[in-house]
Amino acid sequence: MGDFLQFFGENIKEFLTYTGFANATSGHLIMIVVGLVFIYLAIRHEFEPMLLIPIGFGMLIGNIPFKEVGLELGIYEEGSVLNILHQGVLKGWYPPLVFLGIGAMTDFSSLISNPKLMLVGAAAQIGIFVSYALALNLGFDPKQAAAIGIIGGADGPTAIFLSSKLAPNFLGAIAVSAYSYMALVPVIQKPVMRLLTTKKERVIRMKPPRVVSSTEKIIFPIAGLLMTAFMVPSGLPLLGMLFLGNLLKESGVTRRLAETARGPLIDTITILLGLTVGASTQASQFLTLDSIKIFALGAFSFVIATAGGVLFVKFFNLFLSKDSKINPLIGNAGVSAVPASARISQVMGLKYDPKNYLLMHAMGPNVAGVIGSAVAAGILLGFLG
Image (cartoon, rainbow, N blue to C red; front, side, top):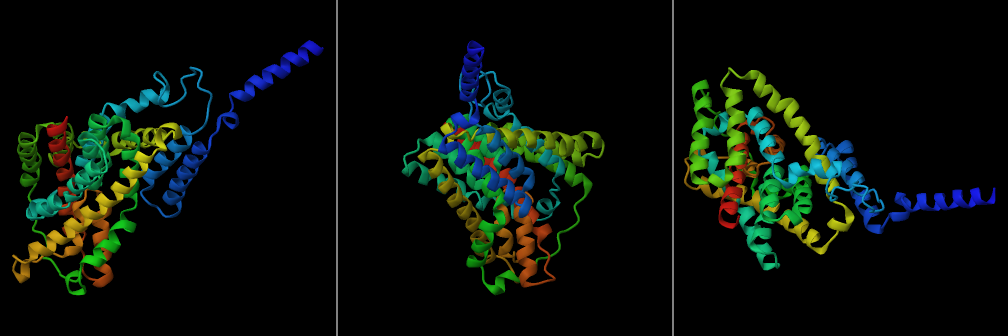
């Protein structure tokens, strides 16, 4: 009996060494709290719930402590289920699939009817290059600085795609930072928009966009691909899938494919992408001084991108007639957080003029921002890849 109790006691002790309680560190607990905050913000305040809930829950999964004895549990252990799912992030094939879905759900009519709004989307990409320069000054090498700077485009898939190519060791921090600031669009952008615009500018009414023909909508993704991809071939994985998705939508003869791309496919990829990005925040790999710097630079680049779009509209208005002026409140939509930043333009416009509907106008620079961020990523990858 005594031998049995001793054997049983030793097994219990051995079992306890494998539990999360025995292997927990303060870092694990910190990241679990961060994951809970993400879930709270998604449910209580509806901050991009389709992003923050998978990411927040992924943080919980990624920070369950365990004894590393070759059980293939963690996301960084080769052969584990999480590691296999994470390959879509590491190898960069989740982002193009997301872009396929975005293309299939995006209406480019606003941009086609008013092409000059493309310039607003391009101006907002200044946040990427300003942050790139600042990251270099903070000691990051050029490839790392480029991957960090792309956060300013407010495009999570593009940030993941570029960082997987240029700075895979910072992929977790960059991805979480990009998606966090995308979710915080209302918090970050509204103060910047109020600060940089006057009451008179906020009530500018723009001409209704013209009706765009179905032929124009079909030609646009084909012409858009040829122009952008010939200019920046390194952006082809993102640009190609974006324009393919849009052609599936606009052609009128591939409705089932378009429905799949913007429905079940993008939903599945969003779940896997969010979960694995969240799980990659494993405390031992994530809680570093560099991660803190990346979060700070991400916030700065987002603010600069918003300000760049708003200030460009104000500057552009100096050359436009009174009847053709653009409301600067749509300048924030130049970042590619679709359609969140365009909705902020709408909300802000209605606040100062209850009859001034800016959403359709804001969608022009918003979708231009998607193209612009992919082009910017292609430029950086072409120079540094």
